[in-house]
Length: 157
Image (cartoon, one colour):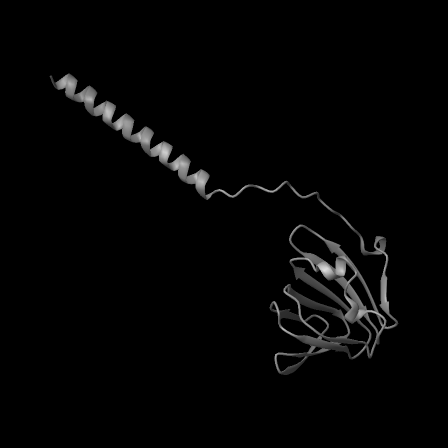
């Protein structure tokens, strides 16, 4: 009789382990997101991307990934980027020069080596205080830039 109990106890433990394993598998399936196809690796030297002339004082180049965009923006002294906003979060890193921003009721001068983090939907305007090279990161990518529908930047000073 002791052997029967032991077999029964062993069966119960095995069933419990199997049930728990199945439960964990189901839980993992429920929580796991579908995996997007792997993005292709991109190696892109800036000199291989043509400069886009937006107006006489403003040029840019950009690279687009799956979830973000990196733009290299060249502004001549006096260039004004009119007030605008977008749903994209933006990081601006000044490589050379300086930009004065009007943002959130403040005037902020961002100089070479400095970064400005602009939240989604926050109106902002900028002026190049000297010839400036800036790198902007946007997440998600700017559809208006990709589609060339960014009229606020084109044809003006």
